[in-house]
Length: 142
Image (tube, rainbow, N blue to C red; front, side):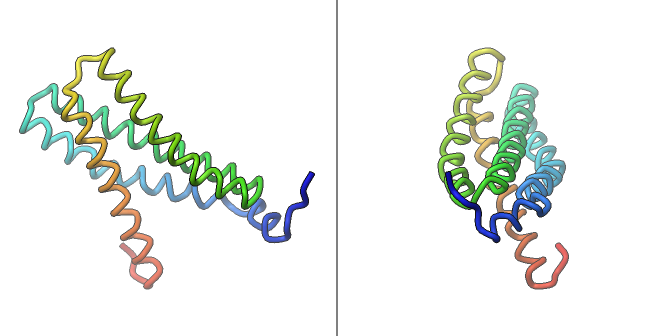
């Protein structure tokens, strides 16, 4: 069908960097998550804290699925990786929305806090990971 390039063979033999990045982001959620839950608890009570915890869990799941999916796609080919990155992003955002909708209809959650916590956790973890990677590139160890 198609022949893999030497670069694709090389990438297929390496450690899955995408999964390492996802795990690193999840480790940062151990710090970000409790802060978001505490803020939600102070503002909206236990319902807010519960909803924020669910929001952080959704984002953590998103990053793990994303890393796994991209690591698998990288082992197939560069074209699969690029397609997985673009289409996978759209599909995973839809998955987040569907998960939030499902949870909001099944569990007693504060929908506003759930939505805000997902957005804040997503952006905060992304910024922390970018900052850490930029620091490693400069030689800093953040």
